[in-house]
Image 1 (cartoon, helix red, strand yellow):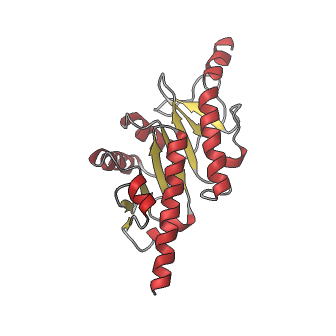
Image 2 (cartoon, one colour):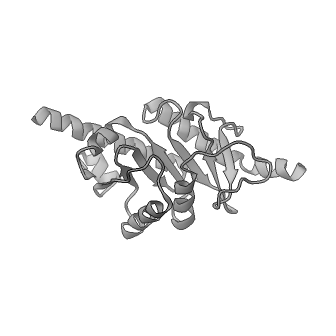
Image 3 (cartoon, rainbow, N blue to C red):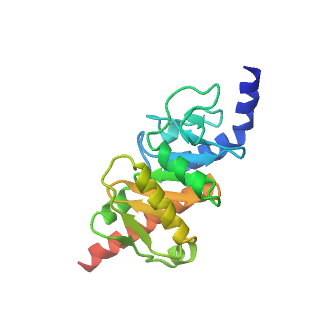
Length: 206
């Protein structure tokens, strides 16, 4: 068990990074309740993901609310609990996108509302043009959990457009990537802000 303790101690910087991002996402309202999920790459292989059923608000820097696991779905030694049901999406993205160090998925309301009747989120502000740089595709994947094939399709979308920081799942929300959890979460915030402004502009024009 000593080895397990040492291993968990090595995860503390990742716990802190993920917890900061999770708390910010909750405070900003881009994810409420017990939904959404976030992950970070373990440098030596594998990932740390939010546990199933937990809230972003309840995760802690000491490791509460987080589960360390291999990309194949097996938990690392000493881990208990159940990972987010979207663990496979996180695993496939982190394993195949080498520039990606973290992934966040949020059920952001304005983004979901916009995505119901559109195929992209347009860059309607100077900020979004500077920070994002390309229209964000809205993918119609009719499933509560992204299936393996569709997750690989998402990887290919990111590979085809290396500047793309996020995609939108119709009726489901944002999937944003980043070099770290802070960058991924900031992107998710900007996507939600952009969708909100686009929606308000549409209302004002109607």
